[in-house]
Length: 251
Image 1: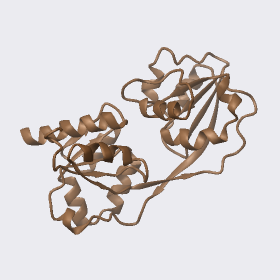
Image 2: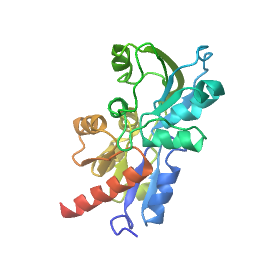
Image 3: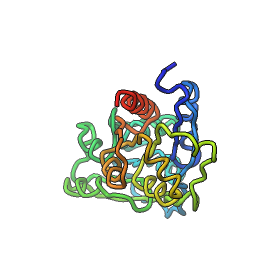
Image 4: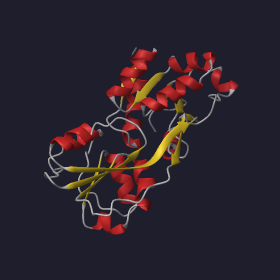
């Protein structure tokens, strides 16, 4: 058991149902876990998928896998290559029985996928991107510059999880050791939902995030101790939490 996690108080803010495995991992190591989603994920009514089979299907997130697979005809995956933007998305595809052609093994995101040599759609090939509504479009422009034919399918959207961050009084009365935020939208939701007392409580804790973009937004909002995990998967988040708590002790 990691001594750094024993009795550590940790706030998880992932959408409902998406932090359970990490919560169990932390609890098994002696941590005290409070799960308070700052976002809710809602499926979107999906238009008919493209009638022509794509050469590549790219999944942007585990939620894209969860809500996108049912919208695709099986043949659209059977004959084309499948790409995932990170190990968490690749794991979701594997669990659904889909063979992943290429995915970054560490980190994740559009830049990481574009840097993978095996992700090589040729000019004139069709690339179908399964994604959420809105969000940054970091993958589209580089692919279009390659001369590929780009199609997109939005299958979910992010919504505020609640009007207020519900922190029990017994938690608010004790120092929070660390919090986990996995997107800028999730961070914005946390800032909007927290009462002044809850905001002060959470900003005094170490914050573990999944990218430099989220880290920059957190520092701009006022967090001093921000740790960027090597990826968005549970193993990477667990390692980052351990590092953040060890750094707190050293400081």
